[in-house]
Image (cartoon, rainbow, N blue to C red; front, side, top):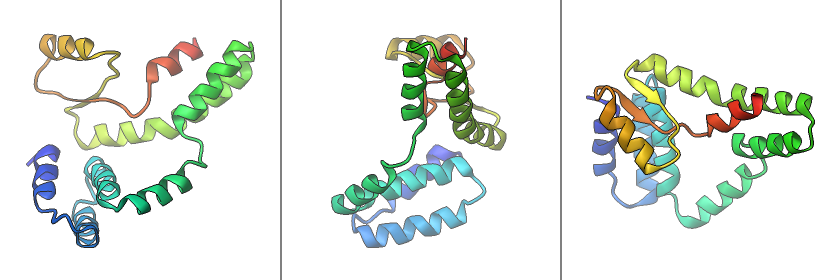
Length: 151
């Protein structure tokens, strides 16, 4: 069974009761701990089943950390100011944060392709003109922006 089928089956078993669903998802994370992509998706699902107040509290905690997107904005600002050494330094950090997740996911399933599409039309054309056997996923960060700034 592939990751999407497993995830759908797990979603179908959710009760709508946050405490029970969190416990169930924790058990599923433990059961599928070798599948890093599925564990990541289950973690996101666990966040979704939390009550809104808990989501707000967690979001407040996490918002204090530098995300790849926030770092990329800093790199673009440095680029606009002509500070290329700072740009490279920031982008190396962005890639260090982002790339290991993609590499690990691809090593688990060589049929996964992470591709950034600028529009729905780009995605549609790509999917209709390429190998249909590959699973296409949107990466969590805009790599073309990173590589553009790196030159």
